[in-house]
Length: 472
Image (cartoon, rainbow, N blue to C red; front, side, top):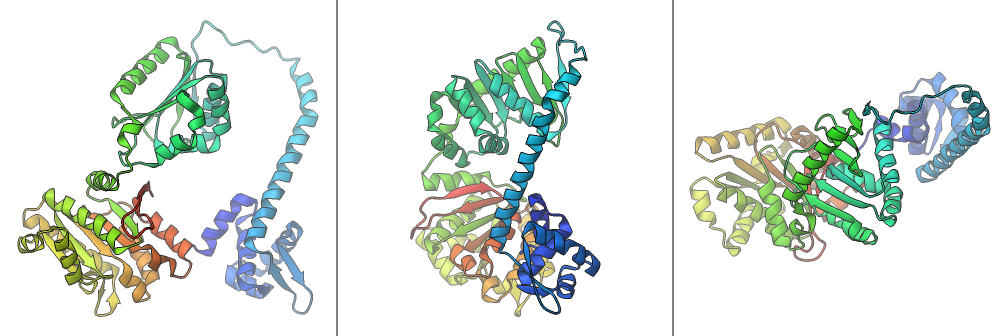
């Protein structure tokens, strides 16, 4: 669950200062509160609370209740967000009107300046460091394109482009501009196909391919202008971008694009709705230090994924550990045998351990992060001593809910980190129905997703159904 400071930080995007957000959220939480109560809970000084209240009242976020002592109450958060959005829109409109009003006067002033036109003979280079500058440059390239846009980028950047600037691309497609995109995504990434399905109106003008080569972000317009990241950092704004219309450099970048394009694979050929195949691709992609979350709706789905997860490790020469809590170890052994799993052989050689949660998580009725982490390290070192290539583990996390240890569970998942300190592969298994019965299930989901690197969801039918795989 997010702290008051973290929630206040989110509200700062809506035009409130950090302390204003804390005071508003505190009043909303308390229902009706005095200044003393607000100051105590929010940890904002009384004099600052007195100074903030009139501003919140003016915005319309709180109401003053007459009486002694004076008390305040807050409007619901949903209404507050709507109100603040409208307020920001009004501020933006007033700013635009103000700038428009002085535009002619400013232009008259600048007519006295003689601006030298850009030389057509000299090649141009520009280093762009700020996020907005990079985005605006690329959007200008899309808007001014006459023939083609070629892009090498990441999945996240593609989502950002289509999510925030779809209108500009739609106009380009209507004008017949051909867009080719090369992505460095994983084979099981099915969300790309959703983009393709949702944007069928683009017709044949949008073509996406996949490459497993390490690439830097690059966009080329009409074989004559390009923007390229100066490092392989995928996030816009964290690394400078170079813009150029130098004929030789653009030609070099275009040749690199064409070479990568012909070596890449059509995105449609690596996507599949075949559930077992998608599971196999996902499991084969896992590497030591990967920390994934698996959310399922039925025992059948849990068995299908986790047993194949264990089997993939065993076939790769790894040891494996399965920690039960929703079912007991004997039930898991029987379920494995029904799926033609040679449990006795693997347990006899030490390759497979099926443990109860009392052996790893909640020992003698108590949970200790340090104890559990040390047990994982011990199992890993033991696997290496026995000659195995590594260790993969999975744990059913139902026991934490049963023992009212949800807060401790969140702390444990955070301690593991999205990338594990121990070079094992870990899959934490959560029953979706159990999670949804917890207090504040949405906040809990958010905390769990933030603590993992990859997420695997199963469908909602009795068996495995459709699965979805996401980067956390």
